[in-house]
Image (tube, rainbow, N blue to C red; front, top):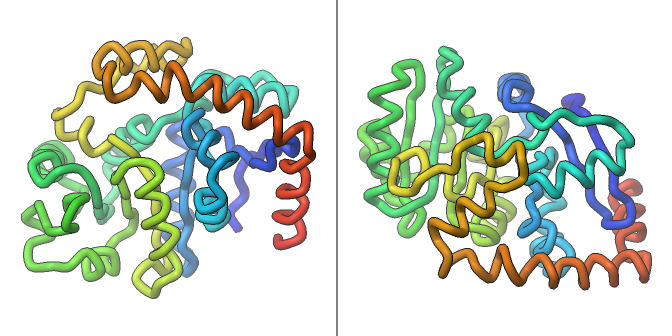
Length: 267
């Protein structure tokens, strides 16, 4: 396993790997030279809620190897658990490290699976225009059909075999379940896989990406809520209260420490 910074929160049974965008890209470069697949997952409040509440999601996340800090509240948890002053750039969303990856100038083949056919096509066109070193094979997230010139005539399985990095943006938890079901297949040997949510829509320009400074100050959720109130009201206004209840139950019953112990024995 490639060495990464690690913070364990035993009371919740989770592990975090606080990394900045450049470190994530370095990790991708190192992992893509191995024979084993690496799933780069993430924790924001929604992912943490699903992990604590849904056994299927918890089981899926056991197949991931790295858990990025994707959200200001999760960064605070990491700071408390590690008793270290972790810089704000350790809170890193998919768009943050993907920008660095695409602009690195290194030759890479990236397969994206997600978004609508139109959004997948627009994202591919933008990358082809702005990032000549990147071979981008885009597939939509509905029928998984090719939506870029580089992917024309290929199945997603064929494309993954050629890939260095596979981005899956089909919404949480659908994307995580899809990755868990496929990552152990032969196509993913030696690949880096990441669940990226709406990152493909941001890349295509079909959705507005929040200014990156909002994430450093913990107010990105306000920007996103203002842009999509009907879609995100429950997640941002109701789910955090439910998360507190679920987390308190886990801590009170010691469920998190039991899960953490099981993971330690497996490793």
